[in-house]
Amino acid sequence: MNHEILRGIKTPGDVKKIDEKMLPLLAEEVRDTIISTVSKTGGHLASNLGAVELTIAIHKVFNSPDDKIIWDVGHQVYTHKLLTGRYEEFATLRQEGGISGFSRPNESEHDIVYSGHSSVSISTALGIAAANKVNGKKDYAVAVIGDGALTGGLVYEALNNAGRMKDARLIIILNDNGMSISKNVGHLAKRLAKMRSRSGYYKLKAVTEKIVSKIPFVGKKIADEIFRIKTNVKNMMYQSNFFEDMGVTYMGPIDGHDIPQLCNALEGAKIIDGPVLVHVNTVKGKGYEPAENNPSDFHGVPAFDYVDGALPEPKENFSEHFGEFLFNQAAKDKRICAITAAMSLGTGLKKFSEKYPDRFFDVGIAEEHAVPFALGVSKSNMVPVFVVYSTFLQRCYDQLLHDCALQQSKMIIAVDRAGVVGDDGETHNGIYDTAFFNGIPNITVYSPTYYAELNNAFVNALYHVEGPCVIRYPRGAEPEMPEDYVCSGNSFDVFGDENAEIAIVTYGRIFGESYKAYKRLKSEGINLKIIKLNVVVPIPEEAINAIRNVRKVFMFEEGVKSGGVGESFASVMLENKLDPEFYLTAFPDCFVKQGKTESIFKQYKLDCDGMISTVKENL
Image 1 (spheres, helix red, strand yellow):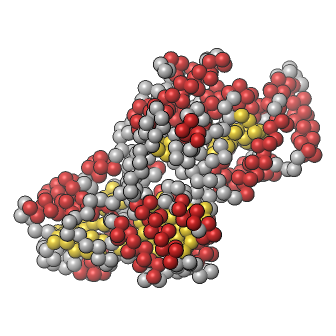
Image 2 (cartoon, rainbow, N blue to C red):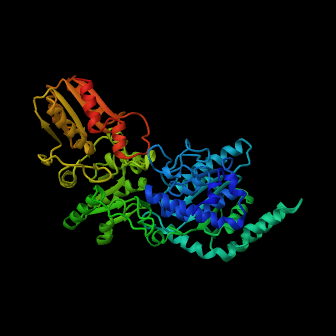
Image 3 (tube, rainbow, N blue to C red):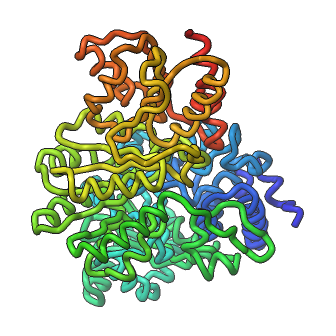
């Protein structure tokens, strides 16, 4: 496919010029571009394929960037990128130096905010609508949000406020594909299913209001009266609509793959005074049979075979290993419960959920709820294990303090994707958790390097540590293990000459790089040792004793420098009246951009070569 129409689109204004009959062909070109590109770069496929026609209709009806379009999570922004002048760059999707897989303001004026986390779009769009009113602007704020995000409580805080702003020019587009990353949970999924049967009432609503409102002098008054009468009739025919109970006008459901119908609905929404929610039904993976048949498998994918949709065989990784170990332990210990926030597949809990449904709890995209929920589970003599990505755990800081550490109940938090995640970039890198754990009392944090250490940490957390424990582990597989390595189960280990006056201190995945650096430096006649921290919060006192005769300490950390383990280690050294020369290599105060993990390590001198260079420069 030569993408003739798509190539000609440099701004959203160009979409408005395309004849309506040509829009289905544009949708085909967009889908072909997305599938062929993601098959090479990896990325979020099924969600983007489901939002093609919807995005075309949005840019046909609204005037970006005057009208601000806010994409929730950003899993569905690929079409938006293609329609806002980024077709030529699209092949660089999620690559180092290329365009992001999420909306990113420094990429385009049409990307209003960074996206990456769920359930925030309505709040942001409402803020824009409120500011527009203050400034006397007639532009619209448009929030595009998926049905899975409705399991997040932040949505209802936003809707509650939106319902009170009766004159806000806020349009919420609910992209309902009936499919979040893990199956939608709870009452709201059932409520949406009921709404899908009510399309007959709304079929001509938008078009009628648009036509009537244009009658000179009296059109607006007639349209308002018709709307009032129809609302009364609707309330007699149907039970009250949840969104309208919140003060938000509801329209839908609309066929999310019928561009003319979508355009009519969105035009109709613009006529209505106050916040409006347009409910759109879409098919996740639309237009690509493998993705339609298996939308969960094609949510976030690595590079794959474009022709038949064959995905590469999954490699062994920490997520699957932890899920398997948890599954096996649950057979022995009936107290163990697993909790996830709509990420059962990504965190390796599928097998657990199928075997032990009574002890498996998917709370939806509600991480803040998960922690006090786990507290309640623990108060009933069970052992909750909350498995969550590091980047999403950031939402739980207050709960970690108040409902976890302060309560001192038995609770295990398994932090997946700790450290650099690579291609997903700034919004998903898990490099901040050690810093905020450092500020929380009464909590033990393990950071294993290998699967065997992960197992040991979990057993310790279950049976040998009082109070809450955290086990953090990276994305992907364990690093190469040294031939002479023995998993000790201790809070720290020392490798090399215990009397050496030079020490490398590290933890987690980059111990593998540190060990390579240690071997090379030793081969060059530099006598040193490695102190490997297995517990990183609190710093083991014995580990400090291991550097009493050391004159130079080189700390390497896959986390942020400010408030991280390195700064904590230095503080404990000073408290113990130790003052060796201390060199800390970690991520500065920044947001680490997308790229391959190996490339990011090299850039920040956290790979073997960078470590050797740092040591030699300061000897």
